[in-house]
Each structure stands twice: as structure tokens, then as C-alpha cells.
Length: 403
Image 1 (spheres, rainbow, N blue to C red):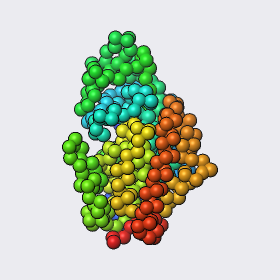
Image 2 (cartoon, rainbow, N blue to C red):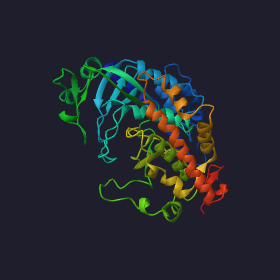
Image 3 (cartoon, rainbow, N blue to C red):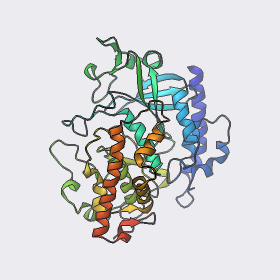
Image 4 (cartoon, rainbow, N blue to C red):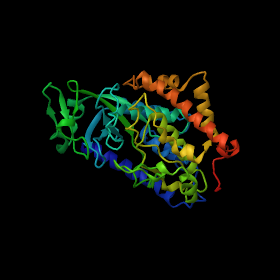
């Protein structure tokens, strides 16, 4: 353990040394691609796949379309031995930080219930359980959409005795117990569902979960947190302004930076497409890398509250699209390809997810729902085109001028 800490400290110091010149660049000097700045570093033989992924983050996406590092990183998260486990601070539900023997890390979200179990209709979106398979599927969907703004996520099956309990810190170990059914369980400490009644249990000590790759630490690559303009009220009796005011986009959103010019408003449309396809209502904030200023992409993070209702489509998630009546041409082209074939989105997702260790990641009902929701998005765009000219709705450039 002492040797592992020493190696990790050396790696961190080396990366900081490489990143510091990047912070000193002015906006005009800023490289469009981290790879340009760190090319000599990327050639080091002892660089891990996690470090390659972090150092190759681009201004307009997390990784390139032909980047083989992502698949290699997924394999690392699946196969590398785990040497340490601790609970992640903050958050509403249980998450564990996994340390690998090569000094890499991943964020682990355990499986709570079977994929067939749907969201309780009496639960508000802000207290619903998180689903590990939603995190996995959202990464694959983000990649198929061509966004590449979601960190790599994979599934993995763990032995709770040897890969969690034996490696956990003292505080986490205190929450372990044997259930009446003789299964090993634990609950950790968090804001919601971290008690004996909502414990995570193995079968008898085997459990699956999602493993998400870490982004560069906020010390190395500071991020800016933005309040999403279509944030919900997170109150059981109140609605957000946009839910009752259909002019909200034109009278509020478009008037203020960063949505009055540049690419950000189009990015919100892309985010709405992803969230609607997975059924995610829990999008309250988003983050961007400060080093790239406003001319960069929003990170697609935290998709644990998706894929809960395969037979219900929450149209309000599309409010940014049907109120602003905007969509990138490339996004529209991708959706049309999903709809017209030769392969539908459900087929592409089925193929992509087949490579995951915990496949089937989604039930057939959820895969069918994806095709249905693609049609719904296209129908909303058709209505926008009927109200406005195609030139005002379908954006060919990467920026939107104030209107």
C-alpha cells in the first residue's frame, strides 16, 4: 500500500507539471486539443490508459471518434485488480471510489434492484433510486449520438467479500452485515437510502455495478458549474417557470450569456435529446472545463436516474427543443439515421451493449422505447419547422446568433 501511494503521488506531480503551462495560456493561445500540448507526454511507455484519456480531452468532446484509448480504458476498469475501496463524500446515494493497482480510479455505483423493476410512480424524480445500468447505457448512447461528452462507463461483477469488504476503510466496514437470507450487505453513509432498510446486498456476496472513469481532478483541470436554465423546481408542490411559461426560451434563456450567442444553446438541445431518450428528469446543473472558456461542450454526467419507465415518455424533458425550436443539423441527421435505418437505435444499442460484462444492460422494453422516443423528437422538430422556417430551426453552423 505504501508503494502504491508513492507511485500515485509521483504520477500526480508529473501530471501537474505538464498541466501548469496550460493554465498560463491566454484564450487566443489556447490549443484546440490537449494532445497538441502533451504529445511528448503521451509517448511515455508507463502512461496508463486513464492518464491517456484525461490528457487527450478535447475542446469539443472528451475523446475522438477513432480514439482506441477509451476501449482500452474500459477493459482496464473491467479487469484490473482492486486494491482499495472508500465511500465517496457528498451526493444523495451510495457511491464508492475504486483504486486500482496501476494508481487508476473509478466511481462505482452498485446494483440496487433488477433491470425489470420500474420507477415507483409515487416517487418524485429527485428521490428516485439511481440505476447502475442507466449509467452504462447512457455512455453508450452518448457515443452513438456522436456527442462523446460522457466519461467511459462499464459494468463489472464484484465479489463483495474480497473486493469490497477486505479493501474498505473502517467507516465503510462498520455498515456491513449479514441479512436474514444469509447475503452480505452494506449501506454506507449518504443523504438518502443509506440505512439497513435500503442496504446493498449480494447473492450471496456477488454484486454487479457500474464503473465510471474519472475526469482530471478539479485541481488539475478546474471546472465551472452552471445552473441548467431548464432545471426543475425540486419541490413536491411547485413548478419551475419554464413549465408554465411557453415563451421562457425567447424571453429569458436567449437574452443572457452564454445562451445569447455561441454554441451553448445548441449544446442544451443535444443534452435534451440524450435526457429524453433515457428518461432523465434530474438535470439541475452541468459543468464545463474552465480552460476552454465558453466555447466548449458541457459534460454529460450523472445518468443514474434514467431508464426507469420504458412505457412512459416524459415530454417535458424536450422543453428546450420545443420552446427554443433549435437543433444541430448533425444531431438531426443522426436521429434520422436512427429512425430510417438500415439499423434503428435499438439495434445499435443492442450491439454496443453486447460487449459489456453485465449484458443485457437494458431490457427489450427499454430498447424499444428508444426507437419510439426518436420518433417523438423528430415529430417535435417537424412541428417547429412548420411554425418557423427550416433555416431558423436546423442550425448548420456551431453557433447561434442572438435574435
